[in-house]
Image 1: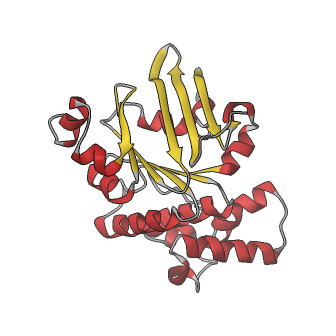
Image 2 (image 1 turned 180 degrees about the vertical axis):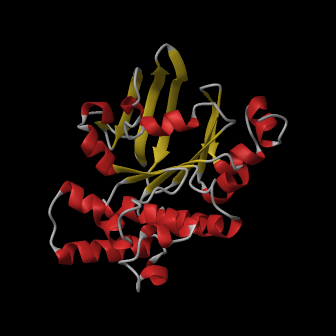
Length: 255
């Protein structure tokens, strides 16, 4: 066990990830602060999604993959823990909403509990209520919890997926381009939600949208060709970047 730095929830140290012989990310180190939002930006193919998939050990589920380096969560080395435990502590929301199509709204949110244990109906009811309120969805679905999850709009489905992730009571919430398939109104609701969630969770978001990163994040990491080019407070990185490559990217000269 490593001694966690003060205020750091998830600590990425010299992390490299491979698909076969191809190295997708190289020697990345990022301290991710507790109860803050860290954004990961960069052009397509720079390793953003690979990095975030390493943070809950999804990367290793693909064939011929491996990692080098370490990821610590409160000092625990994720790669020495049971992957099931890791994914309980580190929840994830994907690019496109992926509710369980054959399940009701209620059963979607309560699924993590039923998969991991056999809670009472009272516990499930309380958890579903809490998670839907945290995901700012309760008022919209409270009278139709038995309806199919697919009856919801795209933005509602994404918030349902967030509620499902929160039902497992994670410590960290990973979000991989959570707004890329949504319209501006739904995107605004998700961004407002992210700002609220950081009071209870550490949030790490991958986004192509630099304006979104500037709006919702406390710290930003800029990746290019699998390497970390710059990391720091979001306002500093966008207004006073230290690296010319960062400046070129955020001013739209490439990417």
